[in-house]
Length: 245
Ligand SMILES: NC(=O)c1ccc[n+]([C@@H]2O[C@H](COP(=O)([O-])OP(=O)(O)OC[C@H]3O[C@@H](n4cnc5c(N)ncnc54)[C@H](OP(=O)(O)O)[C@@H]3O)[C@@H](O)[C@H]2O)c1
Image 1: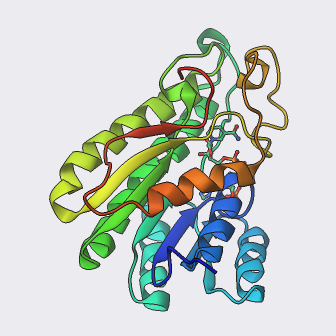
Image 2: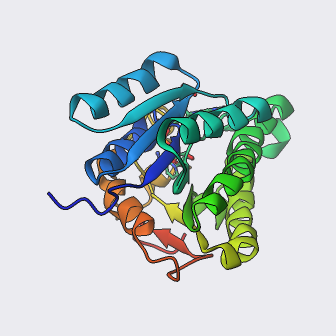
């Protein structure tokens, strides 16, 4: 079987379910050793078990990505288990607030920013020394069309993903000399627990003609980004949507 990620180590945040779980399983099938992380122990254990049962290598590290110490521990455990880190998929995310700004709860609003932006920043920051030590690497941020175009009643999510897209581009410039590429993957609407209760008229699920995906549909693009040469694309956004974001 073709294994383009043989000998690579990938850390995927939010790998307990949804898109992150599919990417973890997809990378493992491609030969990578996987660190599956999220807050829910049973979910990441199940992801890691699915990989090891199929003959792959995986660990599960329970992590809240908003906690700097836990994030440092997540990277340290990955390096200790597999001897390095080649790929970080900053996938974990939430969408807490569904109200217009005037009606919104600041605590809910901040929770989304703290997870999607600060959490991704902490993961990238902690992973950089390990990626540098391997002489090259990939950071893939899971963005959103809503980070490029505002949707009413979604400001927490739109602002968090707009910040993530800027983080992606700044990091790409900072890490060019290190042969670490940093790119954004925009999945478009995917049926997951995040979107299960958000199919109202403001949702991307109601954009006419949009491709509604399952989590496994995101894997080929995630694999493409993980397998580009070190001199390949960086600071780019790749979308699976059928319209401009
Ligand atoms: N579904 C879509 O239509 C869609 C579209 C565009 C972009 N995205 C993005 O794709 C990514 C994955 O979303 P999904 O749809 O697969 O959602 P999901 O099924 O709800 O999965 C989210 C994952 O993130 C983890 N997570 C949440 N908060 C965390 C925290 N503080 N620390 C560590 N892990 C945390 C969750 O696990 P725990 O709760 O156990 O921690 C879970 O494993 C997100 O960044 C999302 O914004 C999704």
